[in-house]
Length: 151
Image (cartoon, rainbow, N blue to C red; front, top):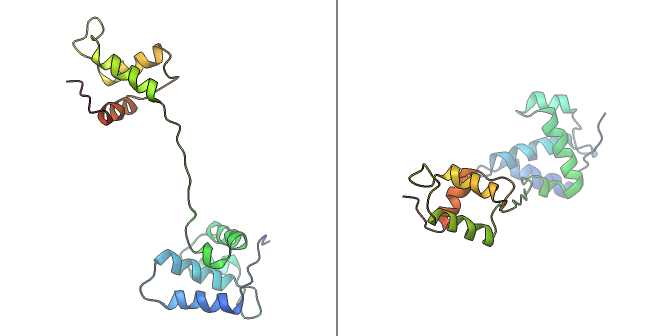
């Protein structure tokens, strides 16, 4: 049973139809517009079932459900656009951590080693409790950003 019912106004139907007829338009926008037109449960719409839409267009049932939900949340025209993804990453090394890394990299290598390796630096930062965990790739990027070379 459908949880979200899409009912388009005549203006919205006209705008979505125009998008599907355009030659130079984003393929995903065009496909989403076709799905919304097929989902339309207003008096002018065909109100096809999700299974019928999935059979006629190259989409899954879940995609149709998501598009219905998004249409109710933000409107049909805005639903054509992909969701904006906001990801924030915590920095592993702040200014003090970067300074400690540079200090380590410039210091004498541990006993039995000719020079510091990225993995050794990462392990040492964890041992000194500068960070809980850190990858050698993060160490490499930080050193590259500061134009410091281990050679």
